[in-house]
Length: 335
Image (cartoon, rainbow, N blue to C red; front, side, top):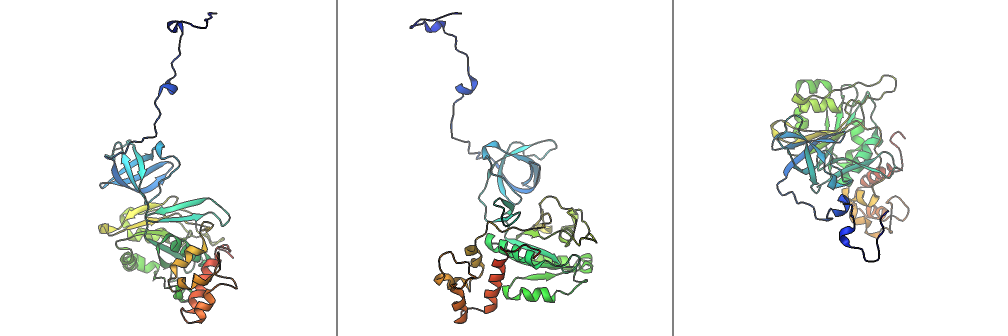
């Protein structure tokens, strides 16, 4: 064994190279100014299909993005092979700021938020009038999520040939939510699709609803050249079977807008939504909250909204609707 004294000759010392230690460290990241602009159409097991200059390109998220994820509707910056040729893979290096974010949680006590879609400006809540039966609590929860995200809600009622829509529409009349009533025959002859398409023109609309309500059937009528698989309602449980497993953005004919078909949901948790944000969807009631105590739930004895309505500033039915929506945060959809 070779030993050195206090002042060894540096030429006699063997230094093992350390590639990791010799690599310069920096927090400066490339700006990717030449990146292509893309729209995320769908996400499947870490692979994202993006629309770039009219071509569909498969990409993966760059490591430099860390835990930040991209979802359907996101506008992203993409580098690499942007030809869209078979077996090519590009890289998403930046997710642009979102104009809106529709979120939900698995349940009301689940702290983990799931982003459903990004950059949508309208939420179409699809529900069947029968087979399966309507679930008003789920509709209410979707409305709360839409108001919180700043999306305009649209109520789409299907299967009107099996039951009347009057009772359900009456309960939502004071909210002023626009609606469309459809049935199977009207979808078959194209009349219903044209009426729905008119409400989607120039907008990016996310379709939500539980399984079996005819959501994907409606999307297929709107975009017939991109048909997706549809399912049926279980005769025993009265629930639909999941056939849509991932969200997909589709352009309407003539590039007149976008529809985003999402998988059927069995629950729509609202753990991430505060009552103070829901009130923004009620401009006639919002000024009345100025006298509310701090942290008011808007459904307690000291709430100033009661006096505001009593003084004639707003319709009592509107206050009832607000409190009904806020109460959905405390109840499950099936209650």
